[in-house]
Image (cartoon, rainbow, N blue to C red):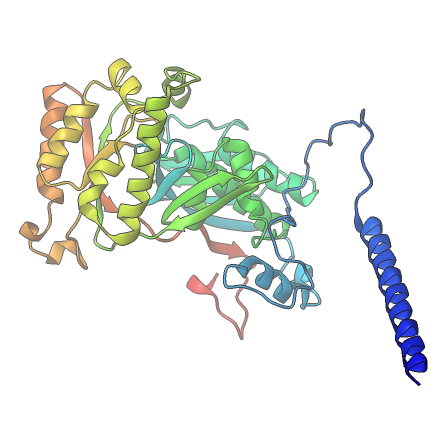
Length: 426
């Protein structure tokens, strides 16, 4: 009897071993089929990218993953979109005319060179319409200085949109109502690029993915070369942007309420190319460490609302000292005067020449609030005194950061219907 049991046990063990071996072989076979075949050693480099639609497969959960974690919001949104039958057909008809409203921006914020920026509550409106011939008209800030031919960045943006839609660009006429000071370090070129892209997409009847792709940002940053201005133009608020090796990605930095922006805007134009030409291609380790620490302090101060730390967070050694020494001698005296007058911080806006100060204490409409509860007026006077001392003619503009980015404010034919009305009846 015991020998029979022993034989049965042996048979079961052998069967288990055979089954395990077969399972291992099947698993190995399937893994080899899923593994991409190695590319030849002399393979050609990848072709130049013509599409701005990305999918970060390496960083996202598997499409069939059963569990979605809280940070997997882009995958969650992709699944919602995939469940819809005709998303590409929705409201995709071409339009005859569109008006886009875009904000000014302030880039760098001190140490965040080419990666941090905020939207400023100064707005330009661009109307683009189908026409028989090309035409650009402009009014407002810098209307006389901005180009009226196809070198205008608005036209560049529209062309990029039509190229992305793979449609021929028709003759168009452009009318610009500019309230963003032109070439003063307040993102007028980025506002023009984004306004053109949005207008072109609407006119062409073409839509782009955002979740997991940020395709509009890809187009704008590919023209501008960096995201510090175009990201806040598109999304509003404080934005921080990086390139992850595949595409540009951005995140909003939380910011405390009640911040006022006090800007000294000189009368002269600042050329970004000239301001960049002053900078070296390399920096030393000590300066790199200085800026890394200041960027971290800046983001932390904004996120937790520690306004006292903003003055440390906007300090910089990568670009402000070089530009101050060569073309903006008033910069550091004006920063010092603004902070001594009660500003949370002050820095060179973008490549200049505008100097930006942040103040606190605003609540509701400032013209119904006692001035002694805020510091913007005192800071403005202190900045103007420095300007007069250095014989720099200009003006002070007081506004605030904008939490909103670019948007369509008028379109023909409208998106609104008898049953569904969008904001401003667009």
